[in-house]
Image 1 (cartoon, rainbow, N blue to C red):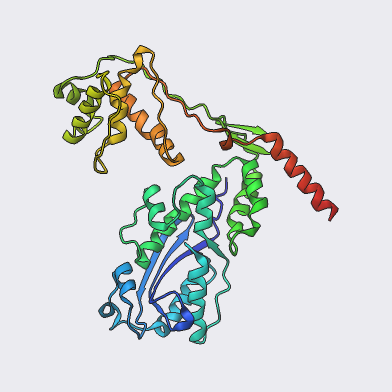
Image 2 (tube, rainbow, N blue to C red; image 1 turned 90 degrees about the vertical axis):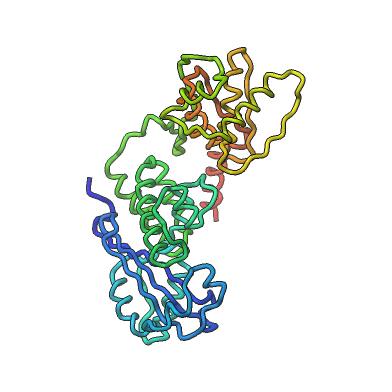
Amino acid sequence: MAKIFAKDTFAVVDLETTGTQRENGHHIIQFGCAIIKNLKVVKTYSFMINPHREIPQSVVNLTGIHNEDVAKEKDFKFYAPKIVKILQNAVFVAHNVDFDLPFLNYELTQHGYDALTNKAIDTVELAKIAFPTLPSYKLSDLTSQLEIKHLNPHKADSDAYGTAILLIKIIKQLEKLPQATLNTLSSLSHGLIRDTSWVITTIADNLRKEKRPLGSEYIQVRNIVLQKQNEHFDSHGENDKFPENDNEKRKLFKGKLHFRRAQVDLINHLHQFINDPTKRAMLIEAPNGTGKTFSYLFSYAYQLYSGRKLVIATPTKVLQEQVMKQEIPQLLKVTKLDLKAEVVKSSSRYLLILMVLCRLFFRVRLINQL
């Protein structure tokens, strides 16, 4: 298979500025750029730029860039030809492209250069399509969620590199989607910012030629592809007796979970509460990182062999996914208990396929009649 985007160069840009209102005399103080070829970062650039004005304290607090950091640097006029050359014939990429590209074009035209007309794509919108269940699409949150190295948020060079790796992950994620899903996304993508739809349509058009079979993890109803939802966990138990003392817990945790005093104390308190019929409620307060979710799962897990069931209600889908995909698998790995877990969602979380198809049908008829 010929690699998609093999002939394309992406210039991933991030700017730090003295403010957002370029018409009110604000200027660029740092230009960062990461060049991608063959879906690999091959070169990075970072220019500190003298704006010939004071950097507001709010910007200093956000970026860590002080007036003295740029006082002896060259101004934008010096860097303009270098920037134009770097971006020549490249696809312009930014995390919020409708800020970075217009701001950069304003600076260029103020110094006698033509505005850039490069193809331009936005990673905020692409990230929402490729990773639709993430709780936030701020760059710092995305890099944390997707385990992308991002050492200095709000520094243009670090943000540009982080955005470049994000773009590569987005493209690889989109390439995994079923062809029918890509076709649908392609047909609906033309309202995206600037040329962002080009990424989706290019992937869809290239992969359509391969006629890939539908993966076993999917089912297809007409042109709608759904991921099979049969999440459950099985583990064959070796010992269903709660580990009463520290030595038993250390032996159980060894090589799988760190023995933390605060967490073990919480587990013991929960175990005592569960086995005391005179107690009806328990209020727990513990610092972040204590391991509260694992603690209550661990304590209750040993009660489930008597035919009892444990219902866990979570306030968000994100936490529900965390419990199912992280906490429970870890619990079963540590305890080796023979337990099952299932996800229960309300009917509002599911598509009524017939209704969707009817709405699509009537919409097409309405358009044809206009």
